[in-house]
Length: 218
Image 1 (cartoon, rainbow, N blue to C red):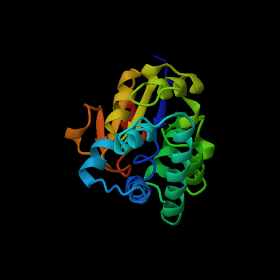
Image 2 (image 1 turned 180 degrees about the vertical axis):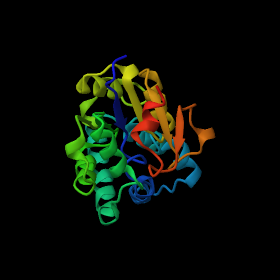
Image 3 (image 1 turned 90 degrees about the vertical axis):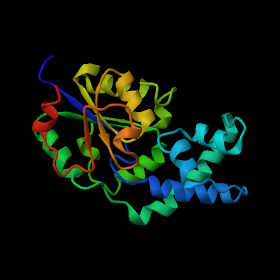
């Protein structure tokens, strides 16, 4: 392996703690359809899952094609409206990304969220100019746990999968990173260690992280 490494971040629950606001948006979305999922159901069937999966699960029929696009737009518009006043990065991440960048580490974001959500968060969290690859749900055919978004990120950044570290907070996201053959750091914003597949490292936030700590994972 050469000295070049890349660090690729998921967005929801990794750059910002968005999951409570996604829950609010989904509650509003489902309440207009006379559904009221429990917190436990959300934990099992929402965090880290695609909108297609979530809506198909709770509406109890396959949601796809044009209907999916319409329903997804309705729910994600609700999310952006609810979340916009509260956007803030998880503690230490901007400083951590600056430290990585200063050491020549290539950086990317790979999210299952729509591009409009990513653009909203990037308008408030000053990291866009540090990123060599930005991928949202519109940029992939297969969603996590499929490794496509991470393998494409590595290709965009000009590195091999074994040169990459992924930051993820969900079961499907961690699995996607592992399926891509990458090292994975579990961000414990939505789940406990026990609820995630085995990771190389676990963090609550980025305050204790540095370039040196990432290099030590190799």
